[in-house]
Amino acid sequence: MATPAFDTSVLTRRGVLAAAASTLLLTACGQPGQRPDDEAVSSTAPGGQELVVGASLELTGRGAALGVLQQRAMEITAESLNVSGFPVGNMHRTVRLEIRDNGSDPVLAARQATELTRRDQVHALVGGTLAETSMAVVEVAQKLRVPFLSLGSCDDIVLPLAERTYIYKLTPDAGDVARRMAQLVKSQQVRRVALLAAEGLHGDSGVRAVRVALRTAGVQLRRTVRLPGSGQGFASAADRAAAARPDGVIVWATAPDSGNAARELRRAGYDGPLFFDAGAVADETLARPYATAVEGAYAVHPACLAGSTVTTTTTAEMARRDFTFRYLQRHGSFSGFAPYASDALQLLASAARTASSVDRGRLRAYLQTQVTEGITGGYAFAPIRHGGMEPDSLGVYVVNHGSWAPWS
Image 1: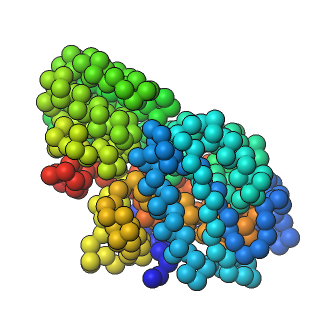
Image 2: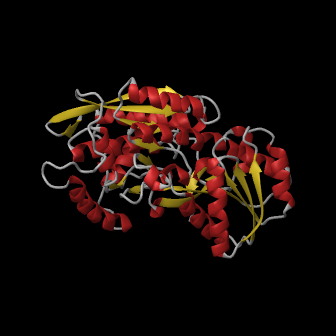
Image 3: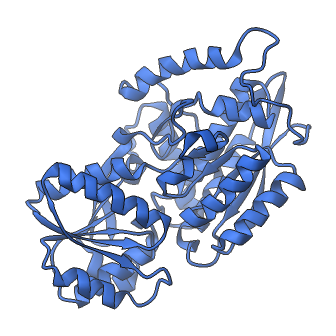
């Protein structure tokens, strides 16, 4: 089966940035004999013919609903890349994965990142579907100068940029999701909104972004309530949100907390529309305990959730179809959150091809030239922007008969 490839021909802002990326690439490369970046120092990572990628993922604990998806995606994409390998300089390389279960524990995630970098000598790190585990890895990756592609949803992961030069984020920025959500809320004639946001960094980003987006859209935010970080006891938070008598409720949390919050809102007597951010899009949100509560709910999520049809023609669409088919064949169901880790591997392989090296510093330098259409959506990394998911990758979906369907 052919290795999925990225499509850089999309005629959107990404198409314009693709041309700019070529210029940035030449700038990064410099003149013959020069390093592409001041920090592109030789790494202590291993030689050989492998691109070694370390992953600290939430395979157990509260983040498992999203972390397990990433392990599956990485394994599928590594197999595809390894069918024939990919050119890096004068040799073909394959990918080797070193995957660890951080148990949704930031302390353990940091320790694993250190061990993967120093002992296992990985060329790059991927992981952290929870904002807290990602932030723990950020500190290690920046200190040890190893590229880290975060799968967490928190804008602070890549900010301030001067202190995050080795860090990249694949998930959409909270502000982009909130603006699309505010447009949707207004289009549904919703004028008064309550916000239920998770405790922690993901929820913090959502609260800031939603407040600005709703104000700009002319929608009143009646009340903001934070969900307990324990994942338990959501009834009290739901009661407080429902007591504000909103026309709509935004739930800014990751699965399975999204479905749990929806169920408690219904039990509290709220029967209006629900709006989820992208973190809700996992099988657990649609599971039996929450199925009735989330039916008809909306979510803002990248385009991969829509799937691909037999008539797809672009390279990105065909890659998305191929990945979805293989994922379904192996695991029986497909979640829109899964492809992030697949895109992370593809971005690393692409950076290695362009850099003609797997040196950590050169990978970092060439990651920030990646402007491409992945399986999840479009990315436009640049020296001044390490949060690469493009706003026009976002779409609106609705829960229809227990599954996510494009909204029109």
